[in-house]
Every structure is written in structure tokens, then in C-alpha cells.
Image (cartoon, rainbow, N blue to C red):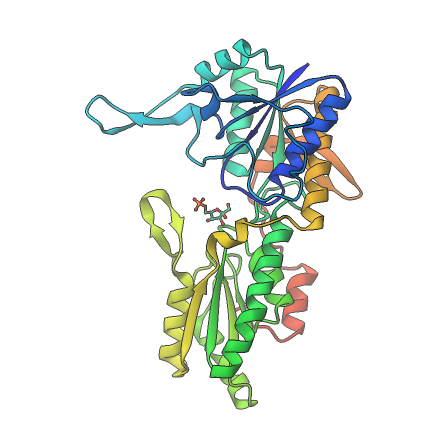
Amino acid sequence: MRIAISTGGGDAPGLNAVIRGSVLAAIHRGWECVGIRRGYDGLLDEDRVVVLDANAVRGITHLGGTILGTTNRGDPFRWRGQGADGSAIEHDRADELVAAFRRKGIDALIAIGGDGSLRIAQRLFREKGIRVVGVPKTIDNDVGGTQLTFGFDTAVQTATEAIDKVHSTAESHERVMVVEVMGRHAGWIALHSGISGSADVILMPEIPFDMSKVCEKIARREAEGRHFSIVVVAEGAAPRGGSVSLIDPEHQRLGGIGDKVAHSIQEMTGKETRSLVLGHLQRGGSPTTFDRLLGLRFGAAAVRVIADGKFGTMVALRPPTIAPISIDEALAAPKTVPLDSDTIATARDLGISLGD
Ligand code: F6P
């Protein structure tokens, strides 16, 4: 048995732990493993398939990033290239990919990725017969069917530490500080880091916000003698009746909502307000113990699922176990924060404004 491993889409802390878990579990069964470099690029334009043996995965559990590299522009069904005149064109190279799999003697693929990469994996399975098992990755924690994705815990830890640091400067200067965190469709990072970092306001994609409610909360604190406030806003949050803030509309890149919220607060309350964007800081660094363990568990579980012949599936955290679910189920809808969850109730009970 020869399995291939690929990492696609934005990176997340814990990717290397998944790779190690898969490789060691495969070797344990007497199988061979190869890694495809930079998403599927390594099998198309370049021949960059590397042997993954025990040596290759030694000492990588604690490392951020991915030893295989990644890209979020690598869809073989819609390959972006250049036409003869230099213009951008898209074409379907999935059959070339399938041929490359055959040439390399690859029997099954472990595709580690978020919704975009899992969608590609699902098409490779369904339309091209590639034997695929997916592993859910994203710091945003918005893949369906799994209680958690790896990378999320580390991102929340990083965001919470940043909010803690912003607190002292906000208090010294009696300012409002707005911290923009990641979270395209879901406010998991904003909610968990905001509550843990004692934010006063948390804005997330699930709850369209009303600036007057945000300012009411800041004014109430002011009246109580608390002359500073901390606002945490997810990049995908939007005002009631408004739309998300994009810095690159062509590629749908989110960004700028923190700045807009800060500007409105200063205008509406007269309080000096500053904003900062945590951005890709949240995707970097050494994974937390939780993400290391989850990554190793996902990686080893993916190999067990291959051994059981359950393809077209994704390993999902379903405490106390990790179970294969269909990739269709995982992709049915982004997993957003349930508004009736106890975490939302906790935020409200603590007096945190959710902007509604
Ligand atoms: O999916 C994770 C994520 O971190 C999103 O929250 C964010 O919008 C996106 O990746 C940014 O990715 P990149 O800058 O790599 O395109």
C-alpha cells in the first residue's frame, strides 16, 4: 500500500502533527508514504513528490506551518495558467493529476484541508475514482460535522494573548481598542478569544451588529468609571443591513472591518479609538498541546479509515472518538456558532455586548 499526503489551502498550526500521525501509522502497517509538495502543484507542473519515512517526520510535531508547503490557488479542476497572450486562463487538469497518481503508484490520498481543499478531494473521489480520506483543517473552526478542527485552539491562544496585551495600553491611555481577528464565515475565534480575554464587545458574522448598541456599551462603561474598552471583531462580521468588508474584492479577501468599527466608535462616542489586525499571526507559531494531540489523532485515524476502505470520507472529532463521516456531510454548510449555545449565553451573562 502506498499513500500520498497533501496539505492545501491556508496553513494551520498542527499540520505537521497530522503528517507525522499519518506517516507513523502507515509505516506501522508496513505501508509506504509520499508527500505531495505545495498542494497538487507537486504532481502537475513539477515532480515534487517526496518520500515520507520515519526520519522525514522526526521532530516536527511542535512546528508550525507544513513541511510539505501549501497553496490556496491549486484547484486541478480549475487550474489557473496563462494563455499565449499572457492573459489568465482556467483549465481542467484533473485527468493529468489522476495519471500522475497512477504513475507514482499511489493507492490512496490523505487530503488535509479546509472547505476548498475538501471540495477538491470530494470531486477527485466522486468524478475520478481517487481513493480519498480528508482531514479537517482551519483555524476558523468552520468545517461541518466535526466538533473542532486542528489549528483553532492555537489561533484562539494567540488572539487571547494579544487581547491581554492590548488591555494594559487601552487602560493607560483611556482608549477604545478594536482587535480584528480571523473568521470568514464564523465567529469562533472572536467569541472564544473575546470571552477569555475579557473583551467588552464581540462582533461576529452570525450576529449582524448595530453600531449604536456597540457605542451604548462603551458609554455605559464610561459612566461606570471604566474609561477604556476592548472590542473584538471577526473579519467576516458585518453591520445590520450592510455587507462584509473586503480589501481585495476580486479574490474575496476580507479585511478592514476593525478599522471601520474603530472609526465609527470615535465618531459616535468622541473617545480616542485605535484598531489593529492580528491577521496571519493567528495562523503561525507552534501548535498548542491540544492541537498537536488532535493533529496526531486525526492523522492516525485517517490511516485506520484507509485500512477499513472507507473512502470519500473525512475524519471528524466526535468525542470521545474520531469517526469517518462523508465529505458531503462536512461540506453541507459552514459550521457557524449556534446562537443558542452556552458560550453565547455566557458572553451575554458576563455583560459582553454582541452588538445586537
Ligand atoms: O480560512 C482561514 C483564513 O484564515 C480566513 O479566516 C482568512 O480569511 C483566510 O484564511 C486568509 O487566507 P489567505 O490570506 O492565505 O488567502
